Amino acid sequence: MDTLEDQVLNNEGFDFVKKKALEIVKTGFNAGDGYGEVWIRDYNTFIELACEVYPKSEIEENLLVFFRMQGEDGNIIDGFIPISKVQKGSYDYIYSDLEPRYAGHKNTVETDQESSLVQAVYKYVLKTGDVEFLDQMVAENSVRNRLEFSLDFLMQNRFDENYGLIWGATTADWGDVQPEHDWGVFITPDTHYAIDIYDNAMFLIAIDNYLKLVPEGQQKWHPVRDLIAKNVREHLWDSEHQKFIPHRYLAGSPFPSDFNENEIYYHGGTAIAIEAGLLSNEEIKISLQKMIDNVKACGAGSIGLTMYPAYPEGFFKNKGMYPYGYQNGGDWTWFGARMIQQLIRYGFIEEAFEQLLPMTNRVKTNNGFFEWYTIKNEPKGSGTFRGSAGVLYKAIVMLEDWASKSSIEAKVK
Image (cartoon, rainbow, N blue to C red):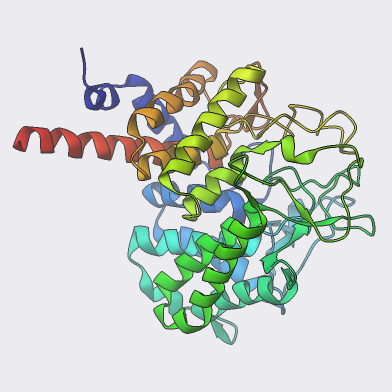
């Protein structure tokens, strides 16, 4: 019988997925064929793969666009699009004299844009060794300084003193759609502000990345990192049920008073929390089992399942947010493969291999990286979703690296 190492290294599906991932990343930087924009939350998840097929000058230029369009308060846009492709009546577009080619937009219900840009710069520098990029000037400020402005924005504009955590609008796990509006991507007078694990875990990862790029920031940012991590465990971790509480509300919930939201398990936010170092190995093991149980309970295809159970019908005005649709319980490789990466990182190799296969198999079956899947494993959304390609490619490479190293060590023994 083949060893686990052999099964990993000889998996033809992995070769197919990696080749396919490289092919679609070569074709552009927008999120996928359903999107005209380059989004920072997506770019952050395929920038390492993009470095494999583009000159670093092109990778760097996309990052610089985000810095050129940075707000005076330090905020970062979600994405940018050529001005010639702007569609009236959609976003309230953002313009900057520093970047006349593009229009930007920001989904204000979410609080991950600043963290995503910091993480993307870190990945770029780590992948290319281009530390000089930090000293590039954008107007009067260097990239190094603008990274800190991004973090400062979150502390000055999205930090709740009571909980000691950052907030956003109420969304479904890592999603960017609030319940109170037909589209749901902008804060409105009806918004219910809340604290969740995804935003805060992303912030923690960003601080860790920033401190590796700019070690002189330790005195200011290390205490902030410790404070956020401590308060996540205090206010968001439910030790009795070994899960994260979906939301801590600042002034009431948008959902009915008899609805027990804490019955919902957030898969995506939990994966990011593990990446942020917030859970012990035992807690990771329990979390994975809960994800597997949830997949079995609803018949989903993979642990990329956003959450279980989904929010009931009618809880979101956006018609796409029906139960087990889109961000409300859709199955997203974009986050499932990030959980695989963390399983490998923390030594759960056999489990990682087992849970990765459904994700790689459906890429081959459907000949593409689809945005999300129904619980019947039907592909939906963009078929060239570059974020999924990036995280899946990285998970496979991590697993193959483990297998190669393990095989060498076995031969040495």
